[in-house]
Amino acid sequence: MIGERGASWAAWGSAGLEALAGFPQQVVSANAVEVSSTAGPEELKAPAGNKLSLASGMVVQELGWDSDVDDDVRAMIEDSIDGELIEEAVEAVDVVLLWWRDGDGDLVDGLVDALTDLSDTGYIWLMTPKVGRDGYVDAADLAEAAVTAGLALTNSASVSPDWAATRLVRPRRSRR
Image 1: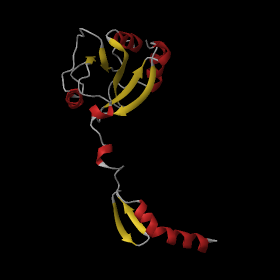
Image 2 (image 1 turned 90 degrees about the vertical axis):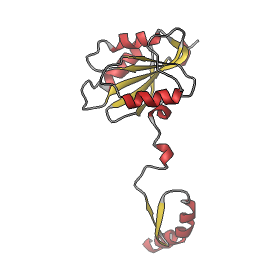
Image 3 (image 1 turned 60 degrees about the vertical axis):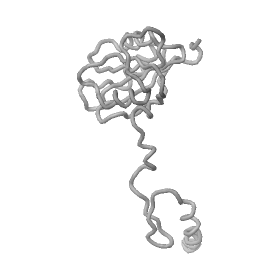
Image 4 (image 1 turned 135 degrees about the horizontal axis):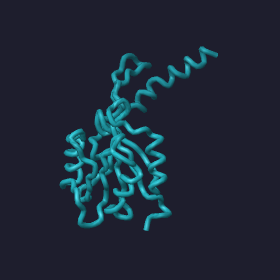
């Protein structure tokens, strides 16, 4: 039984190497491949702006700014939208960037306030300190606040060593 598996792996060896073409690798022998320790191509290590699905021309309103925010993330977002973050909206915005820490008040109120200038198809990126950082907001608190504010959590992204981003949207049934 073991011999049969060994024979099939040996037969797979050269075909398997061809199938792995394009991945970082170094051939050690005819039947072995050493794969690099990275998660994949460098493109997967996208800057914060790309992780947040932002595009040139989008209008992004920033709320909750304080001296502890990550200025590199802010700069990457501005580069992605090819414009500046705005504080006071004159018209509906595409995205609200909401920096929030435990102790900033009632998160539900903060989320409802973030909806004020948001377009019907827009979304909120809630930026919170990561676990172990000052101001960390528990994930259960985020989920509860989102539901109470009439929002749905869709995905999250690690945008810097200290901050995590959580995307919130209006549920489809409530979009106009």
